[in-house]
Image (cartoon, rainbow over all chains, first blue to last red; front, side, top):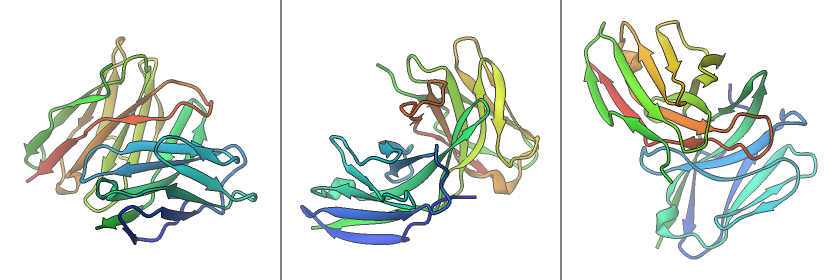
Length: 112
Length: 115
């Protein structure tokens, strides 16, 4: 079962920041939060991940609350090409590796 | 640097048949995971291969099996196909390890339709 909950859909104006929330209240101390996005049934694309500190890369920023029960993905200047399904994922550690447990994701629609 | 590749891109089978899907991992990666994505849902973990052995398995029946070759490429086999097996099958590769930076890179997927 997914360990994250996200709103089913969000709209954002082109050029504005898109803020996508995620709740993961049952996350364990050594489990990472990952964000992927999927455009029109292509393979999911990695965006960013973090454990407890805020992270930033060329695509996005990830803000994780101090209690780690929720996080927000920020796309600073959304474009039409950012329209996609965004998945907030808890990476579950297993004996010999790890697996990504996907939820239903958030459909982000960027509008001009 | 080639990313994850999968073949075929599309496949149509009938109920009861068997199918084999193939995956080549990203260069330098040694671990392959398979996911099933039904229409309108997020991907679901099937299993993960490392060192040519199945290391972890999701909640999928034994009809789903796999293999990993010495060059790290992998196959997913599904026997006795059911209509409900129609889905996008995704392969993801990564470097083994529990460290924080071993993100999984996904291939474009194989769209399987069972009639």
